[in-house]
Image (cartoon, rainbow, N blue to C red):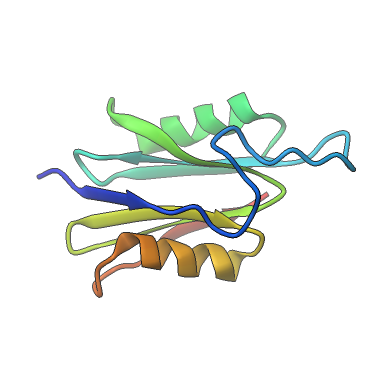
Length: 118
């Protein structure tokens, strides 16, 4: 059964390619991958670069249709799901990312499935 996917961008200034931090030469990366068909997800954190973060999240998701939904650098991401819905978001803090993911999920049965902060 396909899962309805809704995602929302949080308050952090992050694009799918990540947040670029001018003050740090190196920063931790994280990512969240979601399968539209199965609702499976995978996540990563504390990775050295965007490619490593996204590759790990895709491996953890573990099915062919997994796609990267959130990539963060020095920020937080969260995924919420329930009742056939799934949503992902990112923000500056864990609490904001979780709140935005629950809003993006759009169903009263949604709970936080995973979060990461890098």
